[in-house]
Image 1: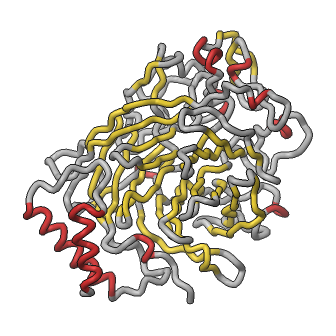
Image 2: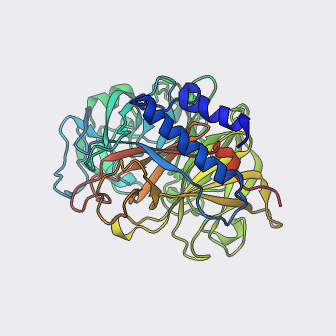
Length: 477
């Protein structure tokens, strides 16, 4: 085996690539065992053709934790417009649940920024849900303990997204009537209907943004610490300070318009994108100069699709934050699934260095019905003759290698195997050059992918690979 690679592996295990949130190895024997696995897997990987079509890469589950679904954060009463499900009876008095995470960013101290989506799944039922980001700290389970219980996750802080400067009503850009502009909550899609229920005083006084205003789905952190957020009602790109203050006017896409876009609601233009198919993915490039935004699905108007007649192909749109505008450059990405009536969506995207990115593809099924939950790699410089990016399967998240048996005796799984049988796997981000964090949106309280009859908790895992992740990307042929 190459000496340089051996030294790199040893360095990563000894601290150069310390795992976020994981405890140190229990003993020298455990460390030696892990290093042996790294060496063994890398010797195989070095002789393996890394071109697409070779199946998933070798990997292993090294960490697992979950925030219990019963977790509540003090705040405005929420869930007033949803129905009971799986033993959960709303509303949640003076509290906000955590319905999983749609965006995840590692912090340097072992914590993560974790962003829920708009609350309860739609514009029509989420006007009492406050948007923002949590600082979470996992205490990962890293060794088998004879149970199928994950490690724990704690919420350390919550930062609400807000518009204290009135950018959304200044007449200069995108103007929206948000929940904080009204005395009473509205419910229902489109322009909604008045419920007659008073808006919480905290939302009014702080001009807090709610799930009726935006459906936030993806997040990226700039060099200056500000946050860019992709959402689905426009779809828009939103720019927030680290304290949650909206800094700029929302940036609309040149031609993608959801059914909830204000111009569509006003009858000025037809929708060009299906509902809930906006910017589920948002990632900076390696230099943190350009953003790449990916919608969940292709436009509904065939003339706007990157490949006419093929609903599998979506575009990765390039955006220049310094100019506050799209550059006009885009990359074609072909999802799995059917050419028409395609049911596969993009869950998230993250940069792995250079022009290499990892993406989530998923169906909308969960539990025993789940079929497509996959991580793919692309290099923006490697495409076919039609300009469609080559992709390489990295991991099937329904068939995760678990040699340490962290998952224990999970139902329906072979020994030393783990899975993520959830509808909305919506977070992926590198922790170090060898390790990915993956986390879920639970769609609380309506889905029970892990245990039938019990709402899913917010799970986060870490996957370790024998080679630096970027080396698995497609190569030019």
